[in-house]
Length: 438
Ligand SMILES: [Zn+2]
Ligand SMILES: [Zn+2]
Image 1: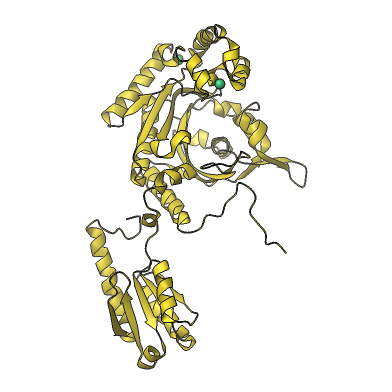
Image 2 (image 1 turned 90 degrees about the vertical axis):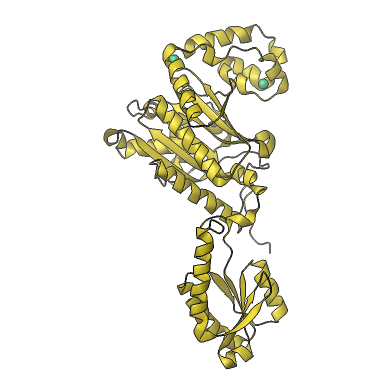
């Protein structure tokens, strides 16, 4: 009989890869928390209607990529393909729009999209999402970009590019769209890809971010939104750029950075990593004023971003996975099953002194046990055989230099405390942080 397997596009994430995800999440909690963002734990399942209204019924996501099914009572439910719609739903449903002037929320967890799996793209993927609701000013845009920059730098990512654009507002975008349409009408539609030919009618703005070289060539001279925005939008964008410049975040203006939905306005951005090639975007977001009204609430301005954890993991991959998982302090090698119980007790003493490690209960040969201790990357292998059992001693072997001593079990607690103090001392010198990546 076959053993059960995962669904295509879904993956198990084992250690040490899982340690990398924990590291990303913990770094996010620390950095986002420093900016006043509070964690919101959202359900992964929502009524399909939420996404139809919040993402848009004619988008690829809603038309082709959602995991949608009827529950036992025939109600249409969907596994969330993104977080923003759910955050806004929760914000309105909890009445926070009536209480908090500015509400900063942070969501972390899996999203689901039925897409063709490829490197960095899985059907269950993980995102870090931040949404700031209730602030319309340019400072809110700049702050969220500063926070995102701080987060990515804390992760240790380098080779990043912050791309920025403005999409104008309800007042000035129609004027731009006319100029864009006039420009596109002058092109020979046959020179555009089939998707863009369709977009000529349905969503001309999206033609700007088409990746097909022929389309990019045709639109090389396209008028840029930022040259055609109203005075308020221009001042808003200048303020954002001014703050980022003052805080030393370098940005690249990208006039092709657009969003397909009407409620996106003004600042839009993307963080691109040179480490992961063509699909190089690790985070993207922008201002959306009007999403709350689409979901039946009052008009509340908002800005937010989503950060793809699989993409971040790819970008971090080259930097040595080992640094995300703290090394175990000990690996207890039991050579004789008579000793297992005493080893278990000794390990409890070590853990009481804040050391971490495992006990290998199965009896076996010393060579094999030492190999396992090395595989576990433990700093010390504690060896406990019949001879040690008889004398109430344990052999402590340093796995890095091979040095070993025989200690009376009664002094193991003292040894653990000295070891812990040494670790703390090393951590203070900035060489070996205890609870985060080194
Ligand atoms: Zn405007
Ligand atoms: Zn195209």
